[in-house]
Length: 468
Image 1: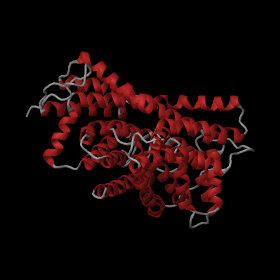
Image 2: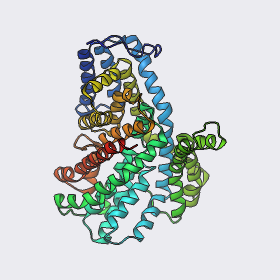
Image 3: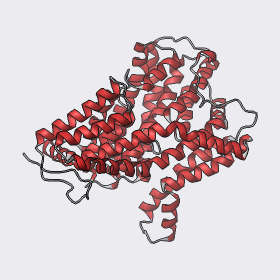
Image 4: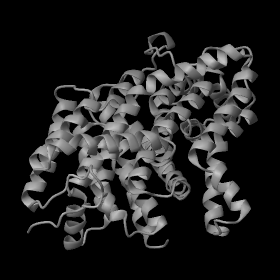
């Protein structure tokens, strides 16, 4: 069968022209296979791998190569414009939280109110709270010393408190904006961010309960006893907060963390309840609940409630904000290149082909999005690359979906991107080294936990799609 030319009206960047199913499938497989090989075997930076994959995709599909640059640049620019700003603001808030001691005060406050039986649940709660504004790697660095302290204080196996903490960070990282993966999927699938955030939190809570405190007892038996590493034996990271005499209050930290969530949920609620774009109240809520304004407000508030409360001078606050941007440059370029690859996929007609195949095979769009993300996650080890690529492939399926179902497709892709982290994932080695585990023990604990998160999340998403 020959596909009709998709996106002929997409402008000068469109690459599409009539292409046979077999050739298009070959182009996709070769492009993704090349990206996987470059990242996993040759250790090429994902930005370069995605860029080269886009070139190969267009070449094998027979698209005009002179238009490739425009197509890739369009996708890159659109993604960085919509997502890059939010990643930057999230990094600023996370850095303020880490350097001011705000993360420590959250942990100390929750742990002070917990007994030995509730400590695993407390660790899951701490990780979920800190996971809202922090990138996964930074959250791990901040939480591991707390995990080890709690294990010693409560005389508990480190896995029993460590798995809930890791689950809290990972669930938020994969399912809840404003983390990069969900943000990119929201942008690619044209989903409503507020609805995605609300449904993401709804799915995240039971997923965290199952994959965190409950699964921790199973993982504890599989792994066996672990020797607790001394603090001096831990890998060091400059993101760890120094010990400070002055720290912000628990209420101030919590309010700052939850402010963007509250504003974005308020916008989503207004869209449902008011449903009048001309009403003044909805116009105000739409403005302050937009992701850019919500995160900007949280950063500005954090300068006062976190920075000034910790005794930072104006120069120190400015320096903290400035230092937060350098580590995310790589993330922004990866996300941007993923957007370029996504646009190339769409312009050569892959999206329309997927829509045709899914309709012919009667495959659920949610299950297809999850499965594609699982395959790419297993191959590349990167949750972000898996989310970006899978969202680009299934994006045409979202065209006729309702607002809630489009949000669920974002979550399905995010859930698939977390499946079975193994030796090609940097997070695997980060967890292994911090906990002093062998490769086998890491597979039985961390990798199994990631799989539980992915499977439980999609098991909740599918029936939810039949209700809403």
